[in-house]
Length: 580
Image (cartoon, rainbow, N blue to C red; front, top):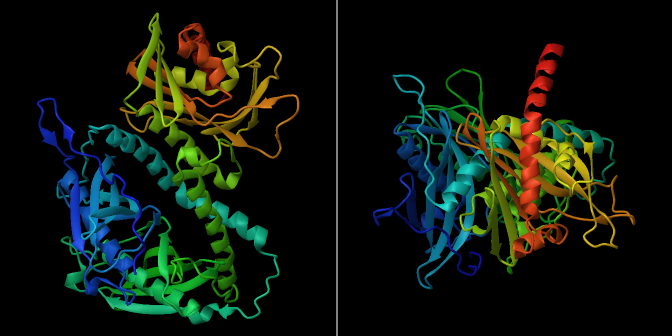
């Protein structure tokens, strides 16, 4: 049967109140509730994951079309991790709403919860993000209207959607680089396949004829139906390895490469790529053809399964013996993808309070650390319960205390263009010119134009104490559109080549950085945020307590620095253009 429900948690935010007192919901929000019947379940009495994917895709599509005002198609779905299964007789509640619209695509957030009608309890099943594209009309390409966030939660998702979109655009390229690197490192290993199950035994191939009931209102094959068929063959493949009923735990991010239509034959192929101790990865490919035409690649997905015992604990799985050539490549790539999944789950999915302050950095997790770095700053900036603590000469200090964590924000305005402010503040080596806390700053690793790792040395917090040093990842982001700020996000990372030393007290930063808003062509609002950690709090505690106003002096110095260097920065950029 299904997993035991967890404690009740808030699964959706309440309706917001307009200025006239009227209660209102997000205009793009769509809800679907389905009671799980035996026809929706597998032989274990649990809701089929394929059926759930169809319901999720349908709900999300309705939300996208409500916003776009025209037909929409599924372009991609981010990683989905299923927390629990759902039993017959329970109710599935699916809520979807558009988080943000770009030119012709939009991100739709999907929340799935389960409800037990007899105990009146609800619990979360999964949370996903899907990208939909508005189809061209007779008038040409659709230009989507912007989403207007009205609550703190909506503002947060709106801001994070830009960062998630950035990850999607570079996801395939970075995954290929990581797979190539990991495959070359494991290619020469001698593996013992004695008593292992041949991968050929898990191979499944099935053909489905796309009929009118499988098509959407645009006469294309329903994306949720394709996902359901892929899940079906993947489940059969996994069952052949373990001789038991497997449970789908996660689906990697995937993209629909092309459409299919009524009359197409969909060829679905699945095989177990690798079996780990408690889980297995199944690769699935979907191809389409009509008549004698060649096969068209529709989709590829990687699904992770477990086999649960009577206590709902994962069982130990048999080992797999890969096929020659391509099978060994898939075997090794599955190992790399497992590491990538762990990186994503550890760095991105966990709450800030559940991870160490300093996370190990290496090229394989650079993308996820950068995403987490920027997302944490965006989430902090989106909070609307900041309290003004003190103000002096238009430099304001705000605090936010929640869950035994103290955060502070310093805000000021400068008569300098936002892009110039961004360029001057994003190089931390310049910061010692205006911030007396930065005694030394050097570049350790210049990963790319968006991410740089610095070593920063700061004064001792006590007269006789050691000076502190920090290993900081600085992630920079330009605005996604005219309504976004420039961002400079900072967090501590760990590098084996720069371990703590006896001469320095190693400090850590969990979340800090600048949000830079262009209010006019040459007038900019600067907000500095910091989620105070033991290594940072002593430097600002007297300001928060009202015993000093050194924050004003620091940011007055920052304003003077920006004013003095905006002309020299322009000259530097002109010289660079001349050199080019």
